[in-house]
Image (tube, rainbow, N blue to C red):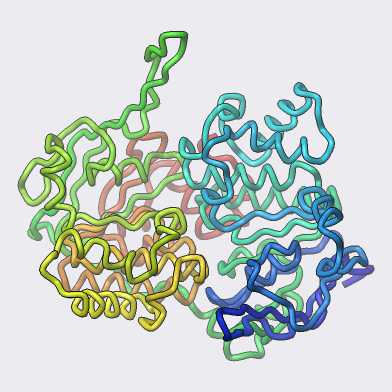
Length: 542
């Protein structure tokens, strides 16, 4: 690397104390980032990537300490600078985007207020200037109708839209160092391509340094100059991207590069029993205006969707962020109001009241996109996973519930011995596995998987795909798999729905659509998913 490093991490160790026990989770790592260059930290979930990045801006928990090392930013040791100086640096010279946007955005404040807040904290006070820069920032990251979105709250945006807002906030003050912790996890493939292009352009214009944490090695190829591979808190291999990807020396690096979802989805079987059906399903949200808040129009989140999920088969639902994928899933489970018949095992459920639906909840489960938001921080993992059992299977003893929880955790690749720990003690990928274990503990018949692999590293993604297929084969499960990761969808889906702006633009057997997509929109999605470079920064659906 040419020039003096902007960020220089030397011999850094991180340890956490719990009671009388101290555990070292990062062990003497060293790396540097120069202006205008991008360093990627890669490795499996729990390898220490995120806490290393959090250490740069001193955002670790109170029970963390640094037994060794320095973190030099512009020559200042971030581990020693006073709190007042640290506040000046955060948000202006160093900005960070976190993995889970819903936990980073304030649910009580509008998007406009939150984007403006970071500008206000660092000297911008003129209201007109604040609004203009907020709109420009949202436009830059691909938010549609940014003027209208300024008044929206985080829960009114999709997961991908929330992540784009976080990126807009982080870049608002033109920082010298941009730390991105899985910044494209929640983004669909077309917007992912746009964001990567945007970050590269901004970096070149501003000579900005980037520390990029990700489990997606395809993204590393596109955006990083240098890469450090982390395993169990240590850097096992480091160097230029071309060198690491072209001739990896460490066995762990070779295993990461080889990891991707493999195998084939279950074969289509039109004679298999129908689990869930929906006919001309609609979810319209009223737009209320005026003093009396009367409906002046409707947002047609789901507009006339017809679909069927059969026993032992998977319906994949793909489309850009905001296309209505998650809303469709929530409606199918009667978690939001909808119009149109929904049939489960031959019985209409769209007219049932909450009390009548409760006995059916054991068979109808969902894994949400944001694991941190869907896991109670006040409950241990054991309490989270067994919660459904205490409602649906009240005859089980405490020991029996613990046994089921242990099996569910083991099935999803987690250590059952960790069941008495709390969600904040796990990485993002580990939290997603906890959410999957919670759904599977009840042995359901139909499961909606809303981006269940988005927070998982590549090797665990491959394991999770194998796990989901195995569970489906053994228990005859029906899945609705909602995702922007088309490689995972291709490995799992029997049938496929492509959605755009609430409507179905293409539908049919997944193998046929992947082999020969008929609509321009589907072809654009596939081009972005399987060749991001070819997609460039095209704004599909903008």
